[in-house]
Image 1 (cartoon, rainbow over the protein chains, first blue to last red):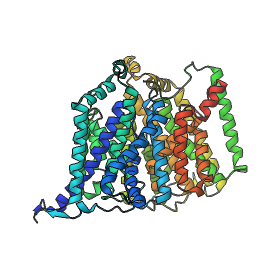
Image 2: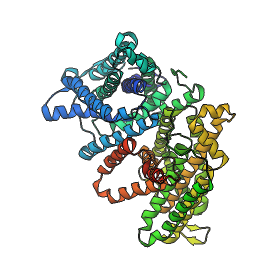
Image 3: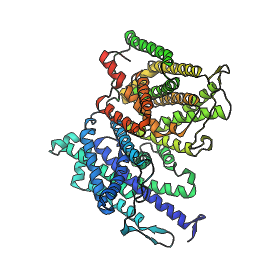
Length: 294
Length: 322
């Protein structure tokens, strides 16, 4: 063990690790928000609630049917993604011609409903969810102790983030998506089923949130308000990064997580507000956001 | 971009003002006699929230800006007012005025940041700034964290009227509400208000006509913040309390809901909406968390089926302005 700027390495790297973990969730969630906003022109306020639904889906799968972490990592996003598709088909699709604000208001209402229902049954205390046995324990790296599960979360979210970036920016499917974002009418004229693409995009964005929720379950407790705690920070992340760029959302998410972790080491009182302060500075200096297109 | 509100764009004539004046007379008369058959404390709470919703509506209804952070002005003004009353021993009217000015100052800073981005980003920025102010309220020593500022004495208005009398307090709140309501009405139909509506309808065009729209938006934001602060400060005097509930994001959501239920961009909608939501909260209080669920359902239902709101629907049906 050694010291850096008078801070024990264990504490510094420990907070950096927490920052990276938080950054993974910020990246996954802001990525989902950006994908949804690109296609639907809706800011999905229910994103936090859907993240919480993912965590609860994993928790309930374990409690009710004994299905463990690994199957839940696949099943929970599918279940919550299907819920998202139902939401899109029954409600959101009626709002596309209206002002953006109505989409925000509707999904805000949905977030209240989802969070309220779970709060009613589970109160505001968190339910514990065990780290899967295959990822229990950790490694001593000399300068810090690295729990296996946390390493997995960072690696997995990097893979999912860059996988999503690759699909959207580098594949044929992604080119259809980007084209439909720019000019849906023209893309429809080429015989591509744009409404179905919109539905599936929403389902995918929601599934991403649920995936983040399952990964968060063993780290934070599974609690009804875990979504609303994180979504407002993610909004600030989105304002800082701008929603025009997928890579921008990923990079901003991770770097703000790290910034938050470092603040916790050097100036703990400001750790809960540092992202908002950065947002204010970015608004003053680069009003369009770091990666914004106008 | 389509306007957030469906409004009647016909020119303002004497006849269209008449329906609003009649409605105002009915409203004022109702509040004067209401304490005879309703709890004054319920009425005062509803009036404070009605003022809060009217202040919020000034932005969303007439400038087309959706602020998702108005709780910061409401809640922080409540803190300022309670602190000045309790710790500095100022008179209630001075505390309320200073807290209102402070909320306006907060609005200047928040507004200057938020108007740098349009549309959906504006909502997210205000929400994030309000969350930051929430964390400040949790940490700052003078707010007393989870406990809030409790046991605030209402004091004597102008040193003459003892506000601990329930009816004195009620009529003071009523006077504040009606004065602020008339001020908002005056703003909406002033030349300044007409420019705001022009910005709502087509900002690019307003700019091309030579209006510095950023200044208009900022001034509207400051006015809205100050009036929201007036509501929060008054509420702190009534309930002798300032707490974290008032700065939490759920409070920002509630004021959106009240305005939406009553009718975005209608003069009387926010008042009716505030009464509906406060009444619902009082009568359904025993159902605990289900109140949140019901509010969420109302949100969804309003957006999908009922975008004009109660007053908006009535005005549309009767073809008048309200």
